[in-house]
Image 1 (cartoon, helix red, strand yellow):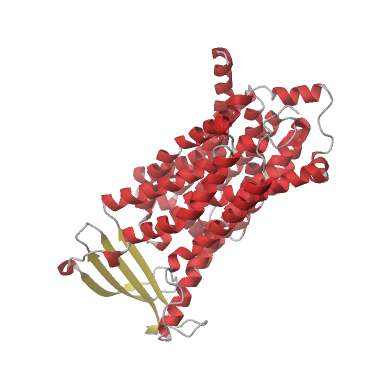
Image 2: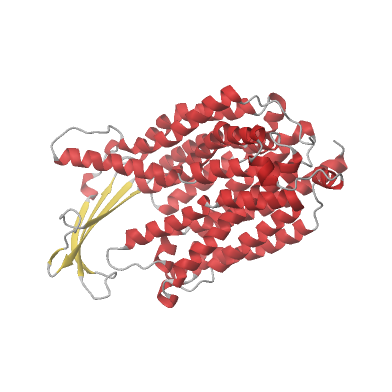
Length: 529
């Protein structure tokens, strides 16, 4: 490829990638700020904090669930009117919805309208993202030379992880600049509002782009589809390829992607009880170190084929997850550390219940421990008192006790966890780096945007996007079984409950590996048919 063509190609990649990265940033800051959003947009009376947080997570998940509908709607438009104009619309829709979330008054100001508006805007974000990826991947692939398509489209694959990294960095910088009180009062809105500037710049860049040459040629020759949905899913042969793309590639790719990034983050914070600030630091480093390998495996797929790189990524993930997560857990687990006994403290005190507007008192018992490797442990048990006695749960008749544990780790353990996140990122890059080129090459020009977008967003938005919640539930359920067994004087039901969440990605990736290995040939690399 000549230098001028390479320069033009990288301009195309840059314009497509920046916009897609911004859309991922917009999509993920909601999840990164879920804890504080739950206090702003959902009612949080005494005892309802967990429900408010779950409502926020449900709203976050809604964005994943509607992604396939966005794929259908915008995929159809992309095959009818063109790739360029469609993903310009998705960019503006995502940016506008994100900016609007930052402007919505709180629940205390406008009542139930607040969470309804947030849900509506979150759905619009999901629809926009459903149309963005297919457009960007198709646009870049249809400009790329055959022998470099995996390498060129792998830059699009970086954008999802880059958007997550940027969201974590922007939030961390905002917290560093503002006081805790200011961030809680208004600072959390700034990452949402900031996106409008990035969207504006990206829109200007995309406006000056040309339509995909293959689509322009098909349109000029009258070979574009008049009904992309019917041709994609009504044609038995093409629908077979849609199912193969989903069950043989994107389902496994989706669970590996979300395990290596979102579940790893959730596991370290929620199950291992590491402070959010340290978790973000670990994830930023792990993701940054792993991100270049999207391009490495995209480039490699041009040389040795795409199918077996993706299948290998799924297989090593399946075989390694339990070992990796056992190591992560044992690295932080204080049971394996030597305590400095003389530094242990226990403090019991009564505190005003700030969550109860009618007043009230909490009995707070705080235990702190220090360990010779520099790790510190803090456990705070809070009992809400009602009429001088501990409040009793209506569900099980037991005292309501809120327990919060925090394990602040040392630098050595922090880098161990970073390394383990990086290893998972290698699995992510193996399955995700070549997948855009692979999907583009499965479908003909006239229905490509529609056909590739749906399996991608079901695999990632549904199977992958729901992974953190399902995996966390499996861990919680196993922990409860052990608690019940212990109270009954019985041995553990599950030996390592913290590993139970991994069955979800292991089983789905395993099914995908078998289907993909047997039924996908991975040989068709033509995109101009």
